[in-house]
Image (cartoon, rainbow, N blue to C red):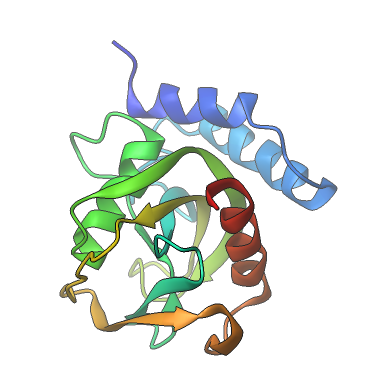
Length: 181
């Protein structure tokens, strides 16, 4: 039986980065997992892997974002691995289900982006680098979202009217549209 750690290592070892910057991140993630048996878990400090999903509507013309309760910014859905998550992709999909309230998503099983961001509120020891692996999914027509405890709000944003986002989010949206639409 493959562990979550082994699955993540296999996914990242085999993933083809779209550019030099993400290739450097891919190597960093692989080195992290090779050196940290708990590299998928919150116990791994100051770095650990996280996974998330960007959700587009069925037409690909809108993106569902959550206003993160702790960060106070609009993001895709994502977070930490939990016991029982069998694969890296399942972490991303579970987080999307939990945080969006959408039960039925057409999930793209391959990562689309790697991104590192420091989170100051994740660990009492100090800032933690989330080594984030990002996926994408399409919501079904008529899908109804529901705000989770981790969000202040959810909103479908038209692509020509997005809120202030980090540059990597714009890249993720473009990649998601390229593979899903």
